Image (tube, one colour):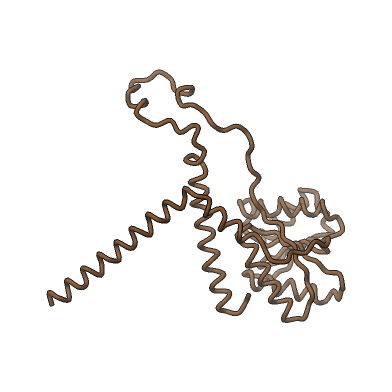
Length: 251
């Protein structure tokens, strides 16, 4: 019994040691550009088309107002201005008559100047695979020899979306060139460094304040570290989704 207890104890210690090493490695990686590079790689696809799109596909994200939904509609409206002849398709679970969220997507695009006659909701798409199937079904009925779809979604969602569409199009023998427009947040180029002593006011604890490091000029600590944690989380989640979709044969 004692031998079994010692074996279990060594096993637990080994597991805790491995977990600690993994956590330390994960923390160290956040101070590099690896999270961003992993995240960016998910926003790229092989052989993107250079043809002007006949359709702009807006993948439904979170509700509106919401970070993902607003970001995607912002870029969809921008793409619609750049390609005035392209129809705008919105992949969502429910149609406008059934869902307030769907109506919000339409309203947001109209608010940004996209004519309502160009907008169509592709409903019955509850996940990326199903949304790809609805798109291919819709375009298969068009029987056009010059189709091209511009996909707009979150950067980390681009690769899986494109792979799902290509898989669905292949099942229908549909030649469907794809281009992508990742919905990256716009960067801030304004000067952001500052000095803490410029912002301090006289107070009761000057010694305590002097012991606290001035991080005003360190954008890596103030912003990049936290952004990298977000990139890591999104990349790991998307990697898990890619594995699942691959095992299901959806890619």
